[in-house]
Amino acid sequence: MCGIIGYVGEQDAAPILIDGLRRLEYRGYDSVGIAVLEDSGGIAVRKSEGRLVSLTSILEESWPHGRQGIGHTRWATHGRPSDANAHPHTDCTGTLVVIHNGIVENHRDLRARLEAAGHAFNSDTDTEVIPHLLEEHLKDGTDLHDALAQAIEELAGAHAILTMSASEPGVIVAGRKGNAGGVTIGYGEDEMFIASDLPALLPHTQRLVFLEDGDTVLIRGREATYRNHGVAVEREPQEVGLDPVSAAKGNFKHFMQKEIAEQAEVVLDTLRGRALFGESRVDLDDMARFCELLPQVRRVLLTGMGTSLHAAMIGRHYFEQIAGLPAECDNASEMRYRGAPIGPETLVVSVSQSGETVDTLAAMNEAKERGCPQVTICNVPGSQSSRVADAVVYTRCGPEIGVASTKTYLASITALYLLACYSAQELGVVDRERLGGFLEPLARLPKLVGETLTHDSIIEGIANEYYQHENFLFLARGIQYPVAMEGALKLKEVSYIHAEGYPAGEMKHGPIALIDRDMPVIAICLRDALRDKMMSNIEQVKAREGIVIALATEGDRELEEKADHVIYVPETSPLLAPILASIPLQAFSYHVALRRGCDVDQPRNLAKTVTVE
Ligand code: M6R
Image (tube, rainbow, N blue to C red):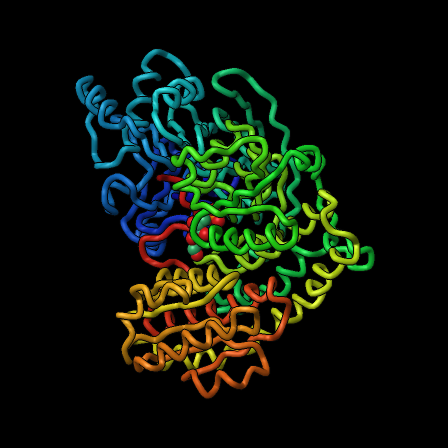
């Protein structure tokens, strides 16, 4: 969950590390630290509880100078956020430093063993066993690369580690075990960068190596030497061709605001060159393996976590309605332990913005073991999920920095729609005309997303009226039900308001007891086969003096008589309507959170990518 950065080169390392941490702060932000190997030969560690700003104020008083260093922004798992628990951690000599992402599951045993051998610990973290373990291995006369390769084998759990030592100047060693988030090596001109995520690398270089599970790497000068489980391997840098500008805030106040505003373009980019309207065909890259496996598929199981799960829930309707395949959706953290009877006849479709979410990867690995064909929807080239799956449909959003997913959610739904169309096409279950019918509304979709975004000031007005309420209910039916779930999730995470998303039919089975004039109900009531059912639910809320904020299709004036407020979204096909309906709900949570004085880009307790269980 944490952000990791490293630098070796000719420039002053500390400013580069701080800039990298600023770009990675969305990964975790309860404490932060750097270590620099100073030109004098000593290791300087500066760290602090709190956000990056608390570290920069320490640095203003004493700025370490040296040309290599490592930095970390933390999301606490073991040991509360504090100065002592912040990374980097050192060995007993203070000449070796480590930063780490993951959980050392056997840290108690290791710590007991190391303490018995005379090591003194300074923190409550699981991480601190790593520098002491390295110190032990180095006593045997091994070098840092060997020491990390050996130590990592002793650590239970999944890990991403960076280390350096004053006794090996010019060297940083990194390792990756399991799925604790990525470690990517960036090749500069005369310098090397290491980071957990692309936003910290892209301003410097696009030539990257993504460490594989079991890899360790020694970086010295411009060279990187790789091993996998101790055996030398070659890893060629690849050019990723991503735009660093899209990771900057530009003229927007917040990343969340910017990322919501970008969505018309993001949907267009996800469709570009894939939905071939003239030919009534879908063209996706690198699908040969998928097409080979597709004929054996009899059903689809979609999975993901959080917002990505909600996208997957919408995708379920696409596979059923477009490709005619029975489809289910399961939370990845449940699927991984469920022992579901799946095999080569089940196509597993995972959705993960980062491609590094631990539960989603575990569910994918489980599916792989059972021989399921797999395709993943992902935003990060080279991520773990893109390696596990047989095929990837990238969402092409550029980095998403706001911790609350917005643009990647819309793009994931769009990609799922394309994938369902592609599957139908390749299975031959739709003729050209029918497929053309599914594709046609996509052509106007980016424009309609843009139009939906223009209602922002109306939504801001409603947010201003209701931001002090402590509970919200989101109701919808059918394909809009996941949109209600996502609306509630967005509000919870950025404004800390309690919110629940329910299928409206469920309301009478319990939630109706909550309804009174203090409980705003956001009802998604677009013009589709279930609109009249939703209208009845709205009547039931009003009969109990509930407040109704309704989402309606443009032109549906009837709702104005029933609801307290109506937010209109443009008409599109019922299958694509969830994309448009999601936008006002994103904007609503953004404005509510701002009025409540919350940090919309870095909400408390959250991290962008959840790499621990
Ligand atoms: O990277 P992923 O899409 O796999 O992340 C899954 C969830 O952690 C994520 O969607 C989370 O729920 C959102 N950031 C919330 O807005």
